[in-house]
Amino acid sequence: MNTNRIRGLRLDQSHLTIDGKHLSDYSVFTVTDGITINEAKPVTSFQSAPGHSGGWDMTLDDPHGYPAIERREITIRIAATGDPLEIEEAKALIGGDNGRNVSVGGLTTLGEYRGRLNVGEWEDQYDAAGTVQWSICPLTLDAEPYAYGTEQRINLALDGKATHARILGNRPAPPVFHQLIDEKVDDVTPAVATHTFTANGNTIHVANTLTGAGLWDPPHPLIIDCERHRVTWQGEERAIAIDDDYPTMPPGPVTFSGTVSPKTNVRKYTQYVTYTPRWLI
Image 1 (cartoon, rainbow, N blue to C red):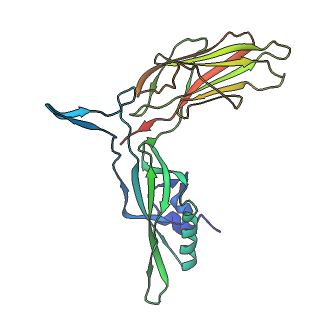
Image 2: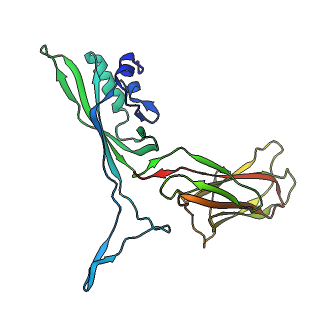
């Protein structure tokens, strides 16, 4: 099955992508005025109270003062043309993504939208002889509210020294802390170590046991994913300290630090932070 038809490349000028593939790779194209991005409403709550004009604002905000945001609906009207077999092929190609979680790019220069894709009803158009000439279909993305930018990486200084950076986007983003530890080789006594990271003064600790490594082992990774609330050491689950919480980073200046202590079984280590900018438009 050919998924790179020249006709598709000629007809689609939208630059839209689904999971990185251009619409022309699906042998479809967008129709005129065929894109609608609906609003993303804040989740707010107000309680009426006697003697208090406007009532009380009961909205639940995050630590940075932002309320939760509802999902938004994005509609893209597409069409397929050619002979009946080509049109059927295009329907099958795009239908393969029906119901999947996908990313849609090209709707904004700031990033891509993510959500569940629904392939709607195809409307076939026939000529006088009853042969299908083209077909139109709405694609609906039940999307998260944000446009997600390109993942960013910030290298961190060692031994708890401050690293200053700027968070892109216009909404808070959860960081992912990475620490790659080259453990001392062989014949070492297991030693308890604490991995510590801070973001704008919010500290997170992970207790771990370093047992040494084989001579040819690569550095062992500790990953703290603050969006998924998940910590892994060499792929195995770990937990943060019971009185800690997973931090998020508001847009703008931020100060990071990170270290591991004691370094009894640590030969050397590196560390960095990654995050994905979030844009609400």
